[in-house]
Image (cartoon, rainbow, N blue to C red):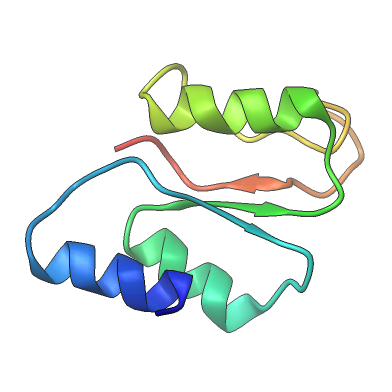
Length: 85
C-alpha cells in the first residue's frame, strides 16, 4: 500500500490523524492530492527545524509555511505545504 493509498483509506474510514508526506521525488499531482486531503507535504532535502515545524503544524501549533532554512519568510520556495487541521 502506498502512502496515498493509506491516506485515501484513512479518509474513507473517517480516521483523522496528522499526516506528513515526505518525498525526495516531488510530484505536483501528489502534492495537490495530499494537501486536498489535509496532509502536510515536505520535499527533501530539508533541515531538522523544517521537520520539527511540520510536526508542530500537524499538531495544530501555528499553521504557516517554512522554507528549507526553517524561516517563515525569505527567498526560498516553501517546503512545508499545508495547514493544520
